[in-house]
Image 1 (cartoon, helix red, strand yellow):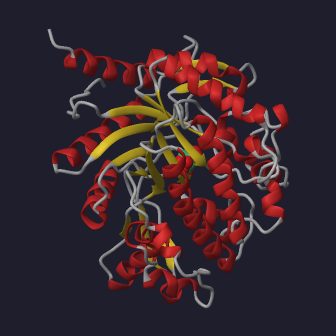
Image 2 (cartoon, rainbow, N blue to C red; image 1 turned 90 degrees about the vertical axis):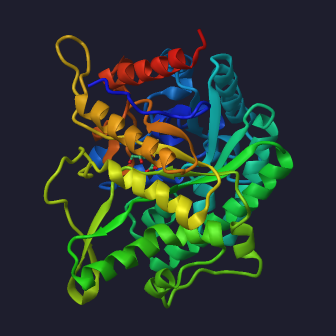
Amino acid sequence: MQRARHRFPSGFVFGAATSAYQVEGAVTADGRGESIWDRFCAQPGAVRAGDSGEEACDFYHRFPQDVELMRELGIDAFRFSIAWPRVLPEGRGRVEQRGLDFYDRLVDALLEAGIRPFATLYHWDLPQRLEDEGGWPERATAEAFVEYVETVAERLGDRVADWTTHNEPFCSAWLGYASGAHAPGRSSVADGIAAAHHILLSHGWAVEALRRTCPGSSVGIVLDCWPVHPASDDPADVEACRRVDALRNRLYFDAVFRGAYPEEALEQVAPAAPPIRDGDLAAISRPLDFVGVNNYSRMLVRAGADGVPVEVRAPQGRLTEMGWEVVPDALHEVLTRIHREYRAQRIYVTENGAAFYDVRLHDGRVHDPERIDYLDRHLAAVARAIEAGVPVAGYFVWSLLDNFEWAHGYAKRFGLVYVDYPTQQRVPKDSFYWYRDLLTGRRAAATPV
Ligand code: GCO
C-alpha cells in the first residue's frame, strides 16, 4: 500500500487541516460568545444524535499534545480556523483578549515545532449576536467581519504569513440560509443569495484589510469545487449539470476571479437577486495570492421532472462513509479547470480526505487501508496536474483529527488520528504513519548527500 511514487516540486507544502468549531470544544471558556453552530446544535433533530461541538476534541486545552503529533507526522503546515466568537463575543466592539491569547499560543507552538500556520478567518461559526441582527443576508455583517479580521491580523500578523478569508462560501451561504442543512438553518433562496453576496463582499474587504495590516503576507480564499457530471448524455441531463455547476461552483469562482455572477446562476434564483451595490464586484475580485480548493468527489446529476436537477448515486465504484464516490480524477479535473478557466497563479488543495468506518481493534490500532488508498490516489492526481503545468503549491489532508462533522455529528471520522471521544485519547491510524513515511521519504530524497 506504500506507493508514494508521486513527484512534487521542492517547496511543495504538505499539511493537514481542521477548523475551530469542529475540534476546539471549550465553547464557554475564556469569555467565548455563542456561535450559530452552538444554537443550531441545540435544536432537536438538527444534528445527528443531538451531538454538538461543546467538547469536540478539546483541542482548546489539548493543542500542545496535538502539535506534538503534528511534529511527529512531519507536516510542513497546519491549516486551522479562528473562531470569531472567541475574539469578539458579540461579533463586533468588545475584544476578548483571552480568545486571542489562545491563538497566540497555538501559533507560537506551531512555529516552535517548525510548522507553518495557515489561518482561516471564517469556517462557519458566526457569532449568534450577529445572526440575531440578520446574519449574512445583512450587509452590516460584512462590515463587522472587517473589524474582526483587523483585530486578528493586528495580533497575529507578525507571525502568520498565510491567510484565507472564508472557507467554502457555498456552504455557509447556501447550506446555512437556503437549504437549511447547516446553521443557522434558514431556508430561503433570497436569504441564500444575499448571504453569498455579503460573504464574498466581506472576503474582498478582508483582503484589503489584510494587505494593509500585514503587508507581505499571502492572502487567498478557500472555495469548494466538485465537478458536476451528467448521469447520461441525454441533453436534458447535460443541461441539468450546467445549472448545478453554475449555482454551486461558478457563482463563487466567477465572482472572485472575474468580478461577475454567471447569468445561469442568477436565472435560477430569480426573482431573488444578490443585493449588489456599486463597487462590490470590484471589491470581491481583488487580486489574490492564491486560491485554496476543497475537493472530495464529484456530483452525478440527471434532469428530474421539469428539468429540475436531481443528484444520483454512482452506479458502481467505491463510496466513502459519507456516500461520496471515490474519484481521484475529479480532483485533477478541478485543478486543471481552475488553472485553465480562472488563471489562478497559485493553488493549494486545502482539503481532501475521506471518512471510513474506522474502528479500534484488539491490537489497539486503527487500520484504515481505504483512507491510505484514497489519499495515495488523490496525491497522484495532484502530481499529474502539476506535470500538466497547473501551479499547485500544497496539499492539506482533511483532517488531522477525527472531529465534529457538522450535521453528521461525530459519526463520520475523517482523521489521520482516531479520537476516542470519551477519553479524548488520540490514536494515530495507519494512514498517519503512511503520510509520515511519505513525508520522511521526500525529505530524505531532498537532502543532498
Ligand atoms: C468542508 C469543511 C469541513 C468538512 C469536510 C468534510 O469544508 O466541508 O471545510 O469542515 O468537515 O469538508 O465534509
